[in-house]
Image (tube, rainbow, N blue to C red):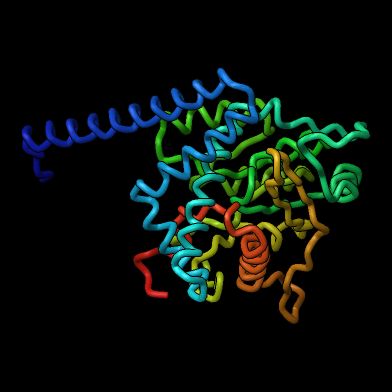
Length: 316
């Protein structure tokens, strides 16, 4: 017979849930209030202010300890002072990323027919053209570097039919706003959950494209290395390649001075295979980590270091 939950305990759980929901609503309201305030100003000074503001506030948050922890794992050879400077700079880029949401429609000025350079420059135009002209399934992977959201926007500019996998923020009020914002500008979106792989598989079956971020922790992932330390990596991309034999292309965004950006789509990579010609899931996952590590080492301040990529509960 099922044991009844005491009324007092049930009410306490409801109270805790409501208080947590209130906390998340307050946090979302403050965040979007700040972004709405930025709308009152021109894009450039507003983004620069967000950078300076985040450099002050970020180090005061609990997440700053995780940022410093991650930098210590990735760069044990760097002096603490240098790692602290990198951490502060990374908060500045997080501030910029938030502010850039507000002005994204102004910032994205790329036009393939335009002769004069704007805020957005694109490297790999030939690769975009190939993807558009050759109708076969493909996967573009990227990492949380620069303003990675712009990659989906430029893909739509070149007429690519891409469905992007993304992980919604934990705060449901923030998640709802971001999903609506992204849907208007970034094409098809699939929230990361238990059934998301089936949605991506259907897209590839139709000969379309898929976009995946590959640099987050995945608790049930494959054991791999990142910056020479043990991490768990999502095997989804490798499994989709094994099933659909699709091309895989790296892409990234780099922030440039004066609130400009370079969006790069690299040529397709060679996927590791076993002697029988089958995609090697383990080695493919490792290959993705190595590509992301190269990007991060080139522009370390532009990666989101506050993700728990190395899982602090594990010993590295």
